[in-house]
Amino acid sequence: MHLLNRHGRVALAAVAAGALAVTAACSGGGGGDDATGEDGKITLTVSLFGTFGYVEAGFEEAYEAANPNIDVVFEGEGLNFDADYRPVLETALETGNGAGDVVAIDEQATPQLFNNADNWYDLGADYGDREADYTERTWNLSHGADDKLFGLGTDIGGMAMCYRPELFAAAGLPTDRTELAAAWSTWDGFLDVAQQFVDANTGAAFLDGPTQLQNMLMSQLAGNGDGKMYVDNDGNLTLDSAAATESIDTVLELQDMGAIGNFAAWSPEWNTGMAEAGYAVMPCPGWMARGVIESTAGPENSGKWDMAAAPGVAGNWGGSVLAVPSQGDHVEEAAALASWLTEPAQQVAVFEAVGNFPSSPEAQADPKVADYTSEYFSNAPVAQILSASVQEFATVEYSYFHPPVKGAVEGVLNGVANGTFTTDNAWSEIQSAAEEAVELAGAGL
Image 1: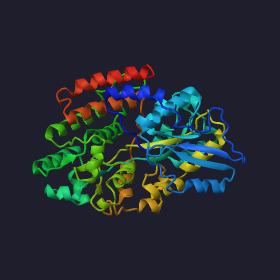
Image 2: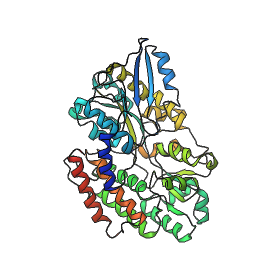
Image 3: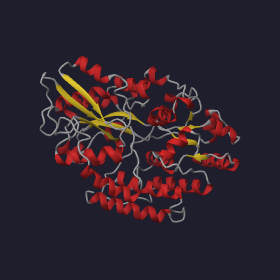
C-alpha cells in the first residue's frame, strides 16, 4: 500500500507521544490471550491500514471455507499509516501485547520495524520458496535483522500521472495520454508543460501540492542511481544525495513558477480539489488511482480523469508487506494466512476488487491485470502504464531513519506551498527539521 504523510516537526513529536497514549486499535490474539473460541475455532486478526481490498475480494469467507477451524477478522482499513496505525503497532510490539496476528506494514517502514528480530516470526523456513513470486526488490524489503524473512509482499506502486483533460484543454495543452506522455517524457519536459499551464491562467493549480511529486521523483532518482536518499542507517543525513537534492530543487523550481497548489496531501482541501478540479495533475502510483482518486472524487467524476506515463518512466512509489508478530498464540496459523493472502492469485483478486497493483510478476502478467482498462480514467490502460514503470527499477533500501526524516522534509515543503517558508530558506529549514527528526528517532521517540 502506501506511506501516508506526517507534516512538520511538531507532528513528529505528537505522533511519537501519541504512540504511548493510543490503545487497542491493533488488538489481536497476541500476548498471551489465547484467541480460541468456545467452538474450538482459532480467531486470527489481520490489522490493516489504507485500502487492502481483502474484504471487497471476499477473502474472509474464502479462507474460512477452506479452513473451517479458523475465523478471520480484518480490522483497521482506512487508517492513516503514520498518524494512526503505526504508533499503535509500535506500542504493541514494545509491550509484547495487543498486535494483530497478521499485521500490514508500509514498505518504507520495514527497516525500522523489522530491526528487532525478537518481535517477528521468521517466515523463512516454511515460506522461503515464495521468493519465486517476487522481484528481487520486493523480496529484499521483506527481510529484517539477521537477514530473516519477516514479511511477504502485497502490492507495489508503480508510477503514473493522473490528470484532468478538461483543464489541459483549457490551457491549450495536449489531452491525449500518449501525446502528453511524450511531451513530459523527461522532467525538463514536465517543467515546460507546467510553465505553459501556468501561463494559460486557467484558474486551477497545475500540481496538487509539493510532496507527492517529490516522493515520486526522489524514489525514481534513487532507484536509478546510487540508492541514497535522505539518511543512512547510522543516522547520517545524506541530503546532498542526487535523489534528495534534485527532487527538492525541482519542487522549489515549480513553486517559484507558480505551478504548485496549496493542497497538502491527505488534507480536506486536497480531497476537495480532487473532486472539484482544483488542480490539473497529480502523481499517481497504482494504489492511488482507484483507492484514493476514484473513491474520493466519486462517481460524478468518472471519465473526467485520465492517466499517462510519468516522466522518466521507471520507478516505484509504495507497496506493503504482511508480517506475523511473534507475540501471537497462533503464529504458524497466522503465517499460513499471511502467505495465502499474498499469493499471486489473491493479488489478482485484490487488483480486480480495488485496483492495488500486484507486486508479483506472475500476477501482473495475468490477463485480468495486464489487459485492464479503467472506465473511470477515460479507459486508460492502467496496468500497462504501471507495469512499464517497474520492470527495470533497481532496489532502494530505506534506512531506519527514513520515515521520520521524510515527514520532516514534507512538513517544510508543505510550509513552502502555504507561505510559511520561502523557497530561499527552504533548504535551511529542511536541514534543521531533518536533524531534529533523526535526534527524536534516535532517542526512541
